[in-house]
Amino acid sequence: MQITPQLRMNIGKVIVITICYVLISIFVAYFNDAILHSTFTTGISKLYNFRTYLLINILIGLMAGILGGAALVRVNSKLFRKKSFIYSILATALVFILVFSLVSVIGIGISVQLQLGNEATINEFITRYIELFWNQTSFTIFILWFVITLITLFLLQVNDKFGPGILGKFLLGKYHRPKKEKRFFMFLDMRSSTTIAEKLGNELYFNLLSDLFTDITDTILNHEGEIYQYVGDEIVISWTMKKGIKNANCLRCFMQIQKKIKSLSAYYKNKYGLTPEFKAGLHCGTVMAGEIGSIKKDIVYSGDVLNTTARIQEQCNQYKVDLLFSKKVFDLLEGSSQFELIPLGIIDLRGKESVINLNTINLAKI
Image (cartoon, rainbow, N blue to C red; front, side):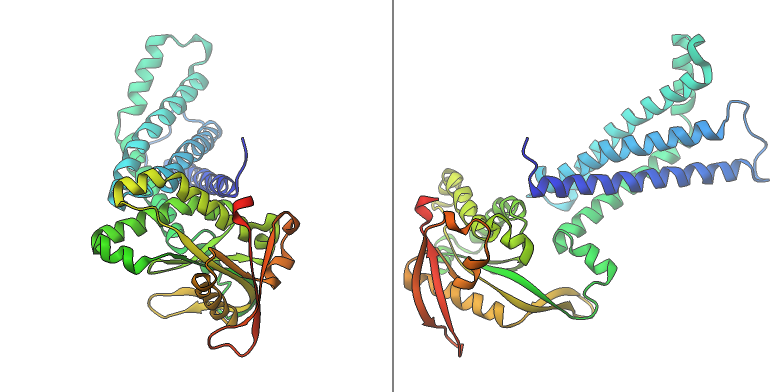
């Protein structure tokens, strides 16, 4: 199986969730042990052994992190991406009950085995299961882990709201002070959007954009792009220089988006009576990146490169092509020799003093 950038990202999320769940389980073990040894208890059962209890908690944390984390990431990132947050909560509750039951059965089984050894009978196992599972402590643990699961889901949703990796940058204060970065930018715009909006009406047009942006998200992530902004029917995608150059990601992303939409042509024609098409402008250069806003904070890029990219995208209609980019971009990309470059000449862009060497590629031969 090919490990895509998006799959690596999801595996990374599961690893982080698993580590956090193990740490929470260890904390719970030490907290309960402290309570048991306090003056508020009548004593400790002869069956209690802290090392065994700690080991079981660690195993439970691992199982909960791997099974529950994988399910949560799957639910949040794929299965219910087009559903509401409430729908995700209901699905998460069902997944939680299943995972909690499975982990509890395994955890209690290990505990009983350690306590009773090979001499335990089936009846003793069942009795101990009932004693450990159906009591106030188990109910408290159930509520605790359900709250933790909901917090995990919320953080996954917040991470998606900001975009992959952006939440971490916020928390670490990476852009608290503006800094210079070199980046690729692509302005991806739907063709004939005004005509389509008039034909479909506001509600159906909004649904079209929602479907469209959702359907191409995986393609963007798999080419290591970051969704910087949604502006009406336009998406601004960004790459660091390293990720944009690698395997010509910034060019291949557009080509794969076209193929994705083409593969879904029957769906869009059936639902909306048309197959949407995109045009794109691509450029790179130095921008300032930093946090902006006091109540609604965001990480914003500013600089001449964004204005230039927008102007390049505007020329697609004039040259009757789907993709335009500067020669500077093409010269930087890995494996650019496999593309058939079509120079379009040096032109003046509206509002720009300097000229740009515009190019496209033969998309039909890719």
